[in-house]
Image 1 (tube, helix red, strand yellow):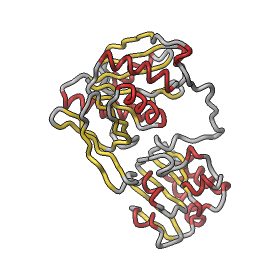
Image 2 (cartoon, one colour):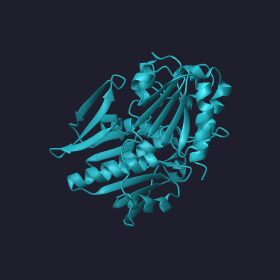
Image 3 (cartoon, rainbow, N blue to C red):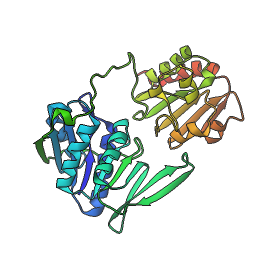
Length: 325
């Protein structure tokens, strides 16, 4: 059996979890095994049909009012009990903030290995193989697991979605027996920044800025571009974040978030290796920098040597024409 953890945000299944479910379907087919999904929280039954559409034959809904908000200790305990009952061969998580927090906790509970931020998966001799970047993305390591369950987190925007189908399956709801003293940590409140964009890890188009923007007010130029382009978000280099120009949640790089959008646009970013480690798997990279020797231009599919303040205004006008409808 292949089991996929389904992350829910504001009552909706995250796209990155559907990508993990799609990859789970492909690996389950290779193994000739069933694909199961697991939802943890409160009143999530109505989300099960979406999991069936992406290949799950059974969805386990672990229910508790104490788990209505994410709790690392509570979620990992509930998931551990389910895994010990089902004994799946493979477990996939999206490599989101929650997945990166929950997967290692589960692996520690079960005393098994974990491969994080994987960009490829496969089956060889009946066992899961994964490919993941190491050394800031300069090397890609192929790994094989020795123990089961084999647990991996999958990088968002890398694994294609399967075509959804009109399918039915079994939804198995189970009340989690957990006490308040066992929930040692929990989200008390979500404070969303006013006008906040799509999470950078889920954006299909990412428009990032660096020190070349010269100040926090100029990130509005990037936000204007993001408002025109569908499923886009604004990212930033560490130097811009450290300068206090934009929030850390927008940071892309080795000490920020790893992204794989279809299009990555870098404005005023030099391309230090720490930044490249977080975005080198982008499908298409466009860079604008006035320094012709900037490392980002060597990585870019399309590079513009010029002043970003002169490039962005005409670019914005052309994009408006294209996306006017």
